[in-house]
Image (cartoon, rainbow, N blue to C red; front, side):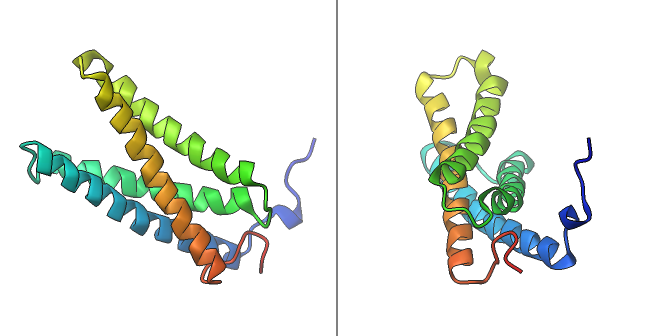
Length: 145
C-alpha cells in the first residue's frame, strides 16, 4: 500500500506557513504561560529560577508544535469537531502528563484542576491566535497556496 504520492510532498511555501502558524501559537502560548506564571508567583513564594524558566519554555514549545499541527488539522474545513478535538487532545495530553508527574506529591485536587485548566487555556489562546492570523490572511490555511 502506497501512502505518499508526489502531491503529498509539502512545498517550501507550505512549510513556511506552518512555521508562521507555529510561531504565532508560540507567542500566544508564551504570553499565556507568563500570565499563569505571574498568577503563581502572586499567590506563592515562587521566584525566577531555572526551573521556572523551564515552566515557561515548555509551554512555548508545546504551543509551537500545536500551531504547526493545528494548521494541518483544520485545513480548509469548517468542521468544529476538528478544531475542538485538536485543542482537547493537546490540552489533555499536556495536562494529564502534569497530573501523572505530580500524582504522588499529595496535592489538593484543585491543583490538578488548575493544571488541566492551564493546559486548556494555553491551547485555546494559541488556537484563537492562529484562527485570527488565518482570518487576517497572515497565515494561509493548509492547501491554500
